[in-house]
Amino acid sequence: MIARRYVRLAALVLVLPGALVLHGLWRLVRAPSPWPRLFLGTAARLFGARARILGRPLRRDVVFLSNHLSWMDIPLLAGATGTAFVAKAELRAVPLIGWLCTLNRTIFVSRGDRMGIERQVADLRDALAHAWAIAIFPEGTTGDGSTLLPFKPALLAALDPAPAGLMIQPVRIDYGEATAELAWVGDEHGKDHAARVLNRAGRFTATLHFLEPFVPEGGRKAIAAEARARIEAAGR
Image 1 (cartoon, rainbow, N blue to C red):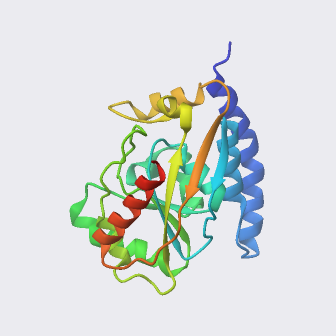
Image 2 (cartoon, rainbow, N blue to C red; image 1 turned 180 degrees about the horizontal axis):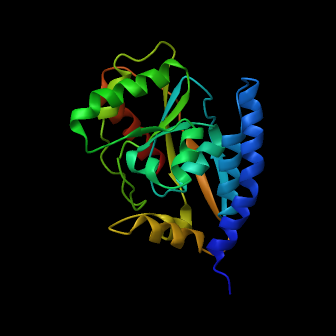
Image 3 (spheres, rainbow, N blue to C red; image 1 turned 120 degrees about the vertical axis):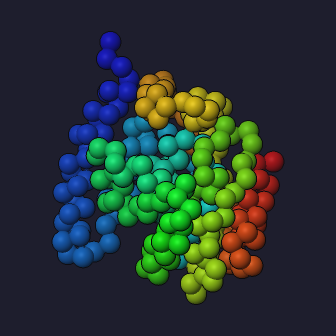
């Protein structure tokens, strides 16, 4: 029997060429391309996710600050909003995945590179100047869904001061009864986690709760604390 993950990946590969061609055509005429969002949303559905959206996500001039449970968070958030992401630099080197990340305007950062934080903040400021929607997972790693980890506010220095009109929108992601099967915790290797999620039978509901946006004020630590408090309260 062919492993379920190979069937799902094969279906995604069949969808990819058409999405790339259409994305290229939109770029050719310099029109905003919806195809990265549509492709990633399709990927989430092929992998078993059914997104349940609570609240109203902003479309631009916004930084989403979200809890982080699994790599599935990325196609789900992107499919719902079209957001770009701040992601770990190691992803850039992953075959195909790294290239696809660049199509979605991913901002790569090395979280362990304390000497390079000023450059990373500058990259984020440049993206914010273009009024993109950008998502950051401020926990800096994935959690098990039972506890919200401390937020690391270093990159939020790009919001001090914030561009005029920019808002912060906290997001709480919840996989409900499927959390234990989807959460990426401990020392599990990335490939093992991906195989485990892709081999999961059936569908699951992923609730994306877009909370009330707020103006980023008071510096990076205050912004991180406010977003974390709102996400934590939404889970009670």
